[in-house]
Image (tube, rainbow, N blue to C red):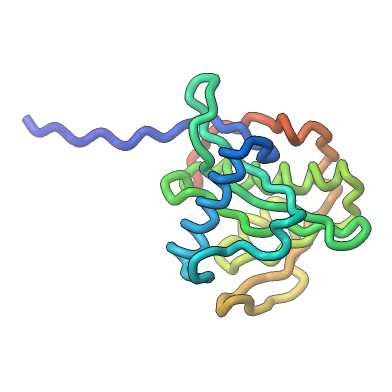
Length: 180
């Protein structure tokens, strides 16, 4: 009798929220380094920049029963000019990329929380491989650009599909669903 190895455990419930605890912020930074430096090679040792000084980090935490386990997704938002907000550094841990809810949930909290803070326009520079996801979430491509040697789209969110969400520090729960 041959026994197949068990698949690694993947949480099926997530808390998507502003990173309010030091361990959440550290986890977001570590995930960004893993994705943008080690995996994609876009930056040498660290992807930190001047925007980090004032950006609001958002995290997706894997939940074990009622306890948060680890940061499995992140994005940051900031207001560049009055009413114009940007999202950037969207990253999901490699082992959680087939969980269809994470990227969309991070994007939703990013735009809805900015909308609650007076956002009139929300923009992002989106890597080519993620454009379809953003289009499905009611984003429109403004122009194609090259950034850090990779094709990106400058995109804007349709705010009519993102109702203001005031309680971003607490956030909301997202359940796993299999990605297409």
